[in-house]
Length: 382
Image 1 (tube, one colour):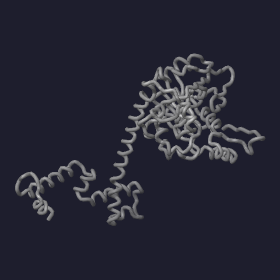
Image 2 (spheres, rainbow, N blue to C red; image 1 turned 180 degrees about the vertical axis):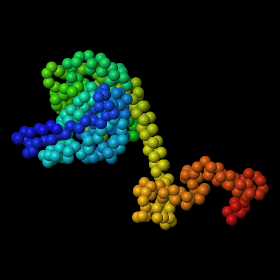
Image 3 (cartoon, one colour; image 1 turned 90 degrees about the vertical axis):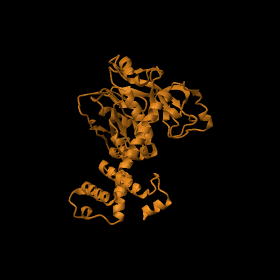
Image 4 (tube, rainbow, N blue to C red; image 1 turned 30 degrees about the vertical axis):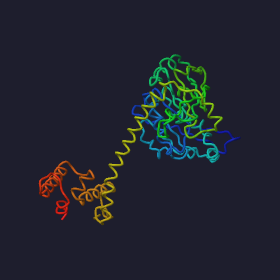
């Protein structure tokens, strides 16, 4: 536990609890981890956040610690993401009314506190941690593509043991989205114009020796030092500043006048992300199908008053057992044809229904012309 006390600022000590990141092997360090700024309203941008994590996981970032300000990380479905640790409602964890009030005024005011705690949590657990701030920032290498971080580690980060902080530049993307693309397209495909101005924005740092972190830098003690890595074609950050809407009017939009080459990030990473989104949607639809059919059967059974004692107060198997029993009873209450139509039948029942329907058709086809006329249909219905 770290105690920070400045009587001229704080009414009470600020307590930061440093909890170890869960790991199958506490002695094994991952190569890269990420400590973004505290985020909020993530449920409204779940697809963007999942794209962001998936893309950087492909680059080599294995662990993420996501601080949210409002509990929206769980609502966005990030709790089940591999390698992601959620720290929900961070302002409430701090126990400071002053900081909570500051956060309500400016959500970025807790960034340095969260990132410093995050870096300390990765001591002994990650070789390098990056301050990639939010889901509108993508690490990009036109030269190495998905191998960017492995090349960066081998040629830069591991080349000098005294280098503990490496700064990487960024460039802003924005303006008019690419023609023919909707907001459903991945971010890297929608914005392909940048302003041509590079600036220092994120760092990679060795968490074992980091003392503190701020928005664009990290502090380390002697004998460790900083390195500014100015190779934007090898590694930089594309900052999509208009990801959630234009930040300025036409005059600001006009600054984004430099276009990307044809085989840019929008092509090689955008296509991969678009395919990944399609797979995620297919999984969601499959889950809905698996859930909706039993619920529909349950609803029918309830409407007919068919629930028995198995779901009453005397049930002893617990909520899960009660639900399974209710679904089984409701399923049994359907006709075999209804079960086949709803996809709730096994192969044997499907065959029996098919045989019964074929037999009924042959019996009704009095003129043996392989079709049922109006009179034959009427006779079959009666």
